[in-house]
Image 1 (cartoon, helix red, strand yellow):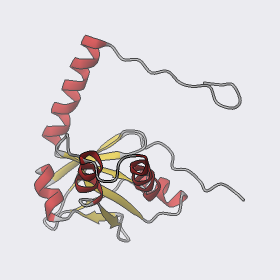
Image 2: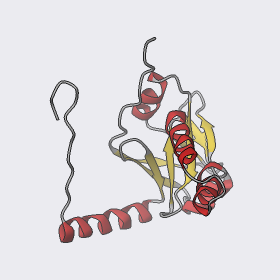
Image 3: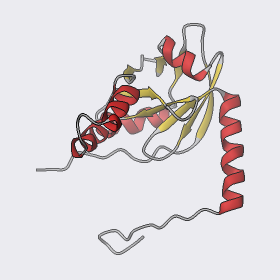
Image 4: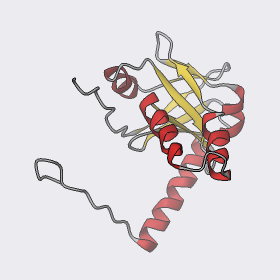
Length: 161
């Protein structure tokens, strides 16, 4: 059986307009990546640590759900994950122009008004209020300069990293 296509990493950052109804355009690059794996929607949920939305495909949400299977189903950790991610998540289908509509609780969580920043961060992408995005990046640059960054890339089956 052929393996289903996997989503490519989301990369780049762009600024988009948000209309009075809370609609914004998902970058064509991101929509195309989702379409390549057969998805015509994005799953979004409020990031519980940052004032942004976390966006991914269904495979990612399902992998997160499957990961909770290894935990005590009645633990606070599973309850927190279920309440903060799965219960808050919504599948947002884009219209013919590539726009998604942000539910009111997403707008309230982010503080987004007329402009948003969409930032690809690998397996997910985030939707931010511009001021919060810039403050978050400044903090990450400061932390990276103070502590340094390291990333080890495991070799692939062909032996390349």
